[in-house]
Length: 303
Length: 240
Image (cartoon, rainbow over all chains, first blue to last red):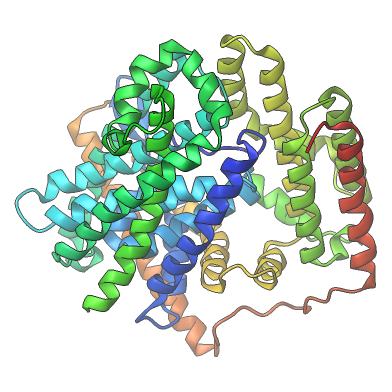
């Protein structure tokens, strides 16, 4: 159940901000994905994008009478590498927005940040760190699940930031659905990567196993951007105020949304939890974008 | 298929089809911003915006009823969220969200129904989008039919072997195997395509039959196409 936000749903600061964040991120990722390859990379990424579209026709049985399908971000990250996967996902989202009216054009930046940049990076992180040892399958599974969860949570938080009220029950049900589809995506990704390796091992991208720089960059970006995130969220309190009014969401979302960055909020606001949550999510958005950039630059230097 | 119909529409002949893709893209972006920022009087503005789009469709000689029906694909998502908003006690806003997303989708549809995708993407390149990404999107669109058809064949084959009957571990692994085969075939196809491109002297970008040219007619088109909705919004749509 991917979340493609249509036009008309996001508040102007939210969609403008995410477009501004998405443009340089995609630009850098595109350059990175192209590097070291001649034109052979273009048809490969395009055809793989078409593959992800077509893969939706192959149903995976879940229970009696229900089935799901691959979403694809994690599979692309494990096979093409993170930068190429992000570019391919961006192209998919653009085609979906233009040709299939699935996701908005002004909201394209938001959808690209959610699914192509943050979702794909989140999918690749566990594989990068644990993709070689005995936790390999677990890492691939986690990556698949994270790609769905990160994309969906970012989308939900952007909608909440835009002041779209969501009753607690609706939020609870959608979070439940996201969990199910995250587990399914993880399982499908593990199964397909396994089958691909059985067929031809060089289809699968091997993680480099270098640890230090990317992790350090992630951590410092997290601290830096949580501050920026607080400012960003407090400059845009309308949606958050409305959000706070709904206690039903509060109990549920607090743990999910606020934990990553809550500790960094040093009490210089009277801190209704909603600000924290909003700050956390906004910070997460920015953090992922920046860590992609930092990660890329860091890698380039260490090669 | 949805995109086959769009493809056919986009290759028809009309004054709107002939406009430079950059002019049409700029008009679309203005229109979308106008729609998404309209806060007041949407009861009047919404039908007016939709009326402009229908006029555009008629001008471009694409069937308005068919195009409007196609834009409705956005509704399942918007109606779910609109329903949530209505449950939260704001039915007016719920209607507004659904209406805005529908009008926006119809506007995007009008652009892609009057501009072939290669020309549209070339226009984006002219507006500064990264070429590599646009090339990937172009390939993606070109091979969408081919790979989808392959997937459909595989699905039909699996069903006729009785693959759809029972759920379970075996069936799950069979589906994973099918995807892996589809992946491998797509991979091989990509390298075939690349060799064929090299053999034909591909030099890094696609050529259009007709080069883009932003002429006086395009400027004259852009003024009312962007100005009219903008004026309407400024007059009736509430504070900026």
